[in-house]
Image (cartoon, rainbow, N blue to C red; front, side, top):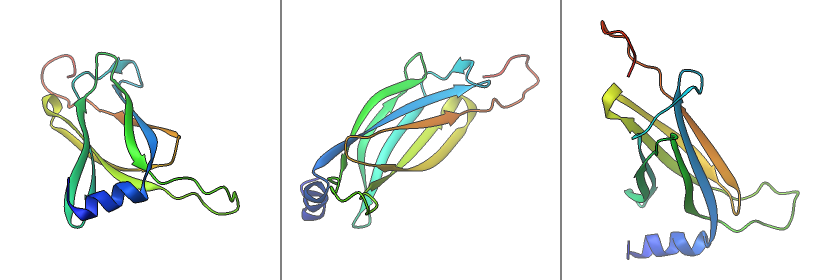
Length: 126
C-alpha cells in the first residue's frame, strides 16, 4: 500500500464514492446474511483490496467508501469513474460471482446480488 503506484492512484482519485451491497434470494423475500464481499482493484498487476466484509442479517453492507476521481464541472463530458471488482462468495451454497462496478465522486452505487438456492433432496433451500 505504500508503493508509488498505489499512492498515485489515491492522488488521481482524491474524492470518495460509495457502494452499497444488497444480497437476497426468493425475489427479495430472503435476505442473505454472511455473504462475503471483497472490493478490489488491479493496480500495476497487483490486486489491491479496498474492502472486505460480510452482509448483515438484512443482507446489506451499507456504506463502503471507495476512492473516486473528482467530477469535472463541464457537464458535456462524461464523468471520470473508478472501476472496482466486487467478488461475492457464499460458502453455504458454493456461490461465487464477480461484478465490475463504476464509482463516481459523491454518488451512491447499489449492487444487488441475487442467490438462487441449489436444489437438493432435502426440503428447503439454503
